[in-house]
Image 1: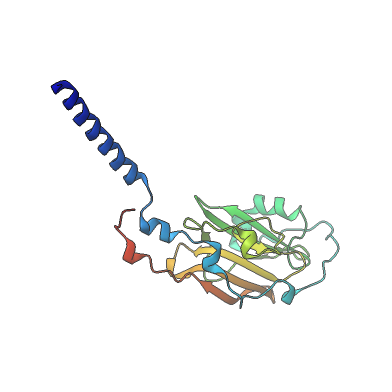
Image 2: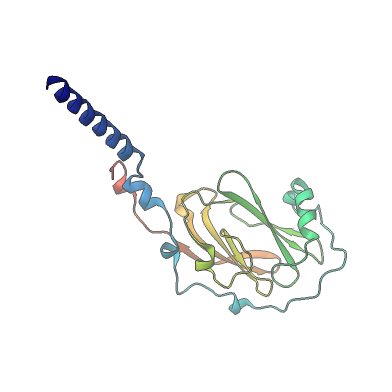
Length: 204
């Protein structure tokens, strides 16, 4: 009888320890709050691709890459030359090239296929989506990019970028740029406004 009692106590203690470990493995309330969803960046006031429509031009013959136009052009020349050969995917005769820069990090450049000029964003160099659980097609369903971080179309000058710009949480959300005079101009931002800090340290 004594052995059975001790065995039962041992099993209870083991089960309790297992439950504790399982609870520790669960995401905290803070972790769950930090995940950005499509609903967090839904915005009825956001610009549309149709508002910046441009005609799609014929494929540019023998497009070149202007290495003098940007330090990015020189640094990533091989990748950008490969992208140039794929033809336009943005704003009529431009090509958006996207490449990784680490876990959940993306960099990009816009290439004018007529002149070879490489255009990079001003004020940041990359976007991070570590905390993003967003389905890009829900945020910008008319996008042709096939990418969950950036939305764009071949027949529009509008570019949408999701994430934390340069991993800066104060610049977290959806950012809408228009290609204008060979520059990307920010015209609208939908910032994530959740206050998750008050949940830090709370267990599920």
